[in-house]
Image 1: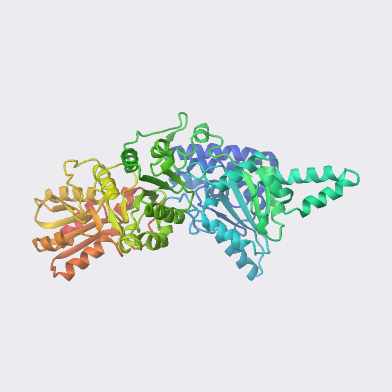
Image 2 (image 1 turned 60 degrees about the horizontal axis):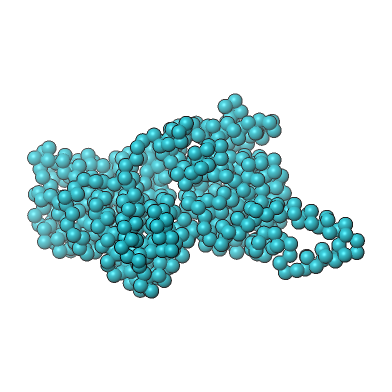
Length: 619
């Protein structure tokens, strides 16, 4: 790591000799593989952009110039080149460095990201700010071909086409988002990959035609005036230049010198320019090259074998995957939808078995919801499996297109609650609130893996909008014996006690059990209730039993405002409850990254903290 040691802060890369720059790319890869094998992180995406990031840093002056990383999970090399290599020992750990760009972390990070398709919009805003203030700096958006399937990127491109000053958009084309890319844009880029370099081909053709006596100039004129022109012939109908956005590429994304040359030329263009760069996810680490999806967001792994260090147990996503396969086999009206996350949400097996009933719509959650609504109007039973923090992007479609028409669409809301190392952009902290406020929507959460299976089956029989939220990670497998039939809006009393009721939703049921064990050590047996439904709540049970308890505790992994606990408190107050109410929930703020256990402890949501609150309130 002799060259990497010379990088202490922003712009140090410019002090290196040309041969050292090449060595630097190899050392960064070795560094990333070594560090991420211990901490985990986004491996494949970062290994794929090492040379691209180096090229960007060679043409930029930080922090003056601005790079906006779409999603931001590929910004590790950028962090290294801006002097943050020491932070990788605690990457994505509680109190440590974020795995995404963070303005609070460095003035070289100019926009907090974590979700896709935002970079061009943010970059255009910054470029306009630069012009209005009469300042001079580069603005560069780096966006993957997967993110370009999202509608927001096209909205931004449409707006950018009217901008007459420099704006660089680097299209990082690796043929992947998290799962394999789909759709017309991906097909067009694929055609471009198989063509010769656009600029080089155009120049070669023109030079050759100029040598033809008499007719050469006529042919050139005819090509130039033809509507499609030679660029349309070569790039197979791509729209960029038709929109007034210059297109340069495709360029080898692992050739630093070629990228420096083209990026330098792009910085002199008066108007928006797309630089199409081809990269390979996972480059330099064979396991990640072969299995980029597996190494998208991986835990610690064995470098030699390329395998996880810990044997993984069945997750809630795995359970959902198994149930979906069974449901697909039993009912031909069941269809599955994903927004470029077939592997992540557990629909890969369904897609393999029922390809005619599986739809990957790309990174387009808004479209996915309304697409599902359209299917539902025709008698199908669509299940849209999506991460909680991604579903919030389709709020209007949920409200207007599904709930207003009371359509039977099932939402499998994965990664609900705290997700751990990905942090505030990925915590599923708001879904109970935003889903519960929608008329006609039903919101469920299972206490264990057996109940998730039962809830999927219930949801497919229910006639209307319905969501099942479940957390990331290992599925709780205890208390299989408590498996009463799922009834709409009915909770499930697991243990009967006295004085204190623990009313727990979903994954917090496990915490309630642990709290109960701590209380039992004090010879106090609380009543433990599995809420099952965040909406509709079991008001009949709550009102009928409330006066038996001096203290009622609600437990949920959602923010308090609009959550289950707030609504339980309202029901209890409205019906004259005089006892203590303790609401255990996520705070109404953005929670940082860290392990779920560590975060719960810091937020006083862990069993010991809950027990202490109950003890204080009931002394």
